[in-house]
Structures are given as C-alpha cells and as structure tokens.
Length: 139
View 1 (cartoon, rainbow, N blue to C red):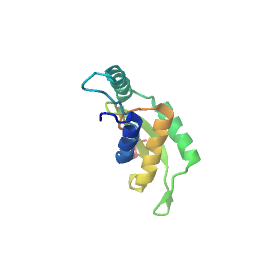
View 2 (view 1 turned 180 degrees about the vertical axis):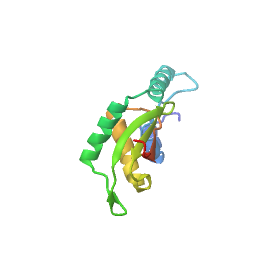
View 3 (view 1 turned 60 degrees about the vertical axis):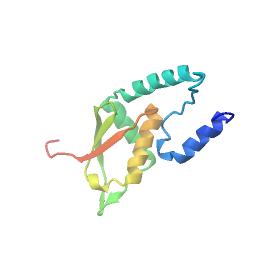
View 4 (view 1 turned 120 degrees about the vertical axis):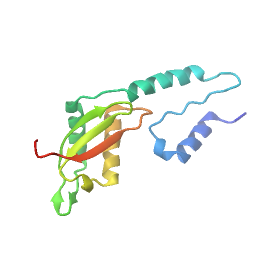
C-alpha cells in the first residue's frame, strides 16, 4: 500500500467487513516494522477481553436495562421472558440465557442484546456467543 492513507484503508476494511465492527484494525509495515508495537499491544488487550469473565449479576443487570429500553416481543401470542443469564465459558465469552421460548428470539433481538453487552462491557475484538435455552422445570 505504498503511498496510501491508512485511514482510507481502514474505512475500506470497515465497509467490506461490516460484520466485524467490534474488531480493531492495525496497520503495519512488513518492510519497516512500523506499527508492530501497537499491533502487539492490541493483541494483548484483545486477549484480555477474549478471556474476560462476568458475574451473573452484572450480566442480568445489563440485559435488564436493555430489555427496559427495547422490550422483548411476543411469540405465538405469548410474551417472551428472560429469566436470567450466566457466562458458561470464556475464550470466546459464551453467555447462556434462560428464556421461556428460545425459538421466539428473533435474530435482530439477538444482535441487539449482543450490542448491549458490547456497549456495557467492551469485548473489543472478541466474538460473543449468546445461547438461548428454555428454563428447565427444576428452577
């Protein structure tokens, strides 16, 4: 990319890879090594986000706030209800959400909840997994 403006390159990458809007973009030069320090620092911070753990109470507060702003819709004539969420693993962070009708969670609402997590906790450069399961009768 000799003579190219890095900001134009970043804009092009962002445009073509919209689904990776949470990922940082680092420009480096293979010839001069310019940008390597920033790249390594970014890799370090992304790994910290990737291995991050959140408490159930923090997750539930985040989702409660998100649902207040944009309530869940209905499914087959019944209101959707989120009982609670918990992080079941990290690397990548995986959040399990217990709801009354898992099939009723529309992909756009799934994305909304994922974006709410990112807004509240960051997770820069890290994919997030949200699993929606029906609460068992034992609860």
